[in-house]
Amino acid sequence: MDHDAAIVFAEQWVRDWNAHDIDALLTHFTDDIVFTSPVAVRLFGGDGVIRGKEALRKYWAEGVRLIPDLRFEVLAVYAGISTLVINYRNQAGGAVCEVLTFDGPLVREGHGTYLAQAPTGLEDHD
Image 1 (tube, rainbow, N blue to C red):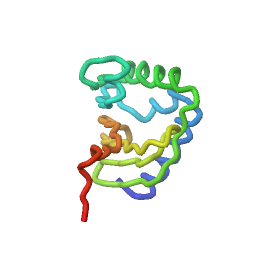
Image 2 (tube, one colour):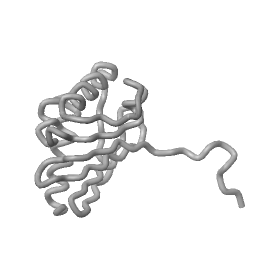
Image 3 (cartoon, rainbow, N blue to C red):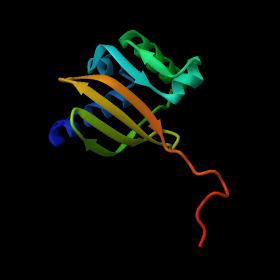
Image 4 (cartoon, rainbow, N blue to C red):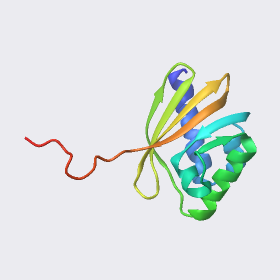
């Protein structure tokens, strides 16, 4: 993915999220999108795999309903071959990366990933 296109996409993505405009977000995804997220497991149970645009709409709408102050701040954007990673901070201060794989201009696969913290006591010590 071209770096300029990656920045433009990420800027629109964060505007749409911060406006809670699910319909605008979904215009960038294929009808047969596959999206994974550990948050989906907490909301709906199952394996955290969301299949299809309508299921993704349901997932995101529930997230916005449960978190009315949802807001993202983009920290960094990484462009790869047909892949985009948006590193952002959410309203709770959590570090998140959205990993998106494109089929032409639309996202066909996405993954919400969250910063893993080392368990207490396992940090390296001098």
